[in-house]
Length: 72
Image (cartoon, rainbow, N blue to C red; front, side, top):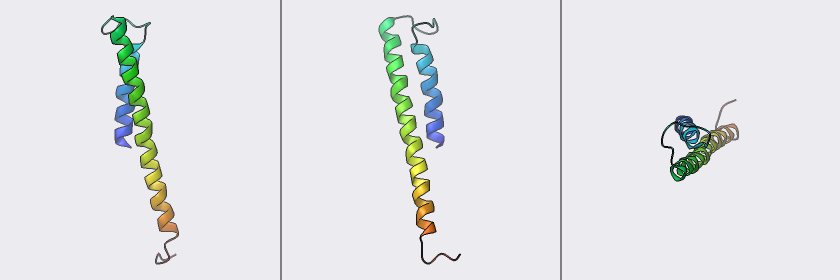
């Protein structure tokens, strides 16, 4: 989950630098487009990391709930 948060923050910064309306960073159009694409790809990767962490936790809770050896 920590990795997802860090990737989300980095991708937000990269996406902001990749916007056409900003003058921060390099002003080259192709460089801005590449930064926007990399930022978007990192957003997708951050979402996958988050989904993996949540699914893993849900699987552990479900397995513990249905464990016949677990005392209630």
